Image (cartoon, rainbow, N blue to C red; front, side, top):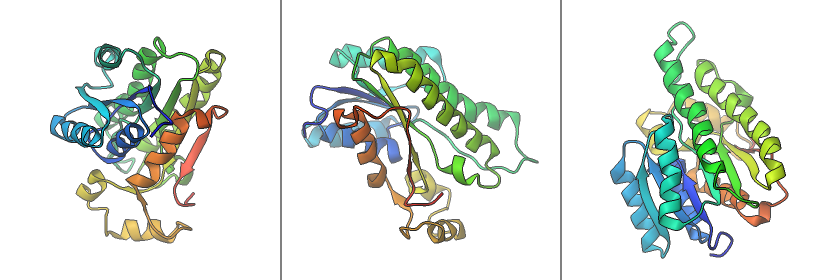
Length: 248
């Protein structure tokens, strides 16, 4: 419990799923964590309670990352509560698959606003407070490698996140700020269960295409993010780490 001692981390979309797992993993390594949520305050409060029960520090802060004022408030709350910011994890994201024939402008706007604009806005607010040694980790998707049918909008957003990661690694590198992405394959989360994917033919297909022979779990992703957030990854920037059990 020392790799992130005295560090402060902001994790967007951390009330459940991968984000919650990341928040708890960072706290377990010693970081104080801002647990962001968009709508599930109860979920965020639960994550905070679990972190505190394990001896860590965390605060739940609501906010829509696609709104500039909310993005700026998230960062302001990190400074207000903990006095600094060292790690930003851009995890907030939504997904909805639709064939091109039924794709709507509303679907496009919502998905790009949260997945892409949200990443930009929170990063923009955060960099004003990040110093040398800080780490930004964007959560992408292996969808950009396997390009599944009926995912043009979602995969498009994650392709943008990949590109943003590379650009910002070059842009912020001279300031000593590292920027990387973790791109998970299928991971069993509350959202996946609600969508009926767990136990479906789609899951079976994903397993059949995965060399390690299973779908991912939140605990497969969170430690990778914790590594990238730490000084152990001090010489790594601009990387897209595919965390998919070999599926690509």
